[in-house]
Amino acid sequence: MQEMILADNAAATLELIASLRRAFRTFATKSNDMNVDLGVNAAMRAVLELIETRGPMTVPDIARTKQVSRQHIQVNVDGLAAIGLVEARSNPAHKRSALIALTPSGSHIFQEIRRRELAEAHRIAANTSQADIRHAKAIIDQLASKARDDEAKAS
Image (cartoon, rainbow, N blue to C red; front, top):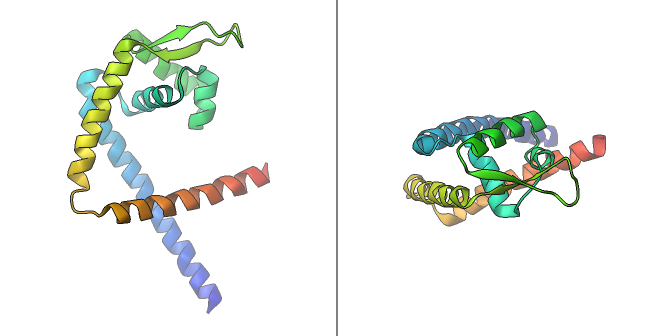
């Protein structure tokens, strides 16, 4: 009986993971569509958010935090710099790795992105309770934390 419950939990977890992947793709596409007029795609938006939240960071630090390659982040930073949303600043801790910071325009654009996202979140969650949303987030966070813990133990 216990093995059956564990198998059911594993199958349900795999279904949830598949659903999360589909949702991620859906929301990334939505982000691209919502912000195309700003010249910012979903990956660039993620970089803006991280810098807005944590302050200036190096490209390698952004890459580690986002768990993607440095090259991927560099492409996005270069694109953001080309449209004036981020700038490189000197880094007293490392002469060859500049700190990437939002420009005033970058901060303004990110606030506009956030305004659009809040309006969309309000629309799509209109018939879902805050308690259900918080519960779903807690479960996702719990599963992701367990996966990270297991990964850390393996390395």
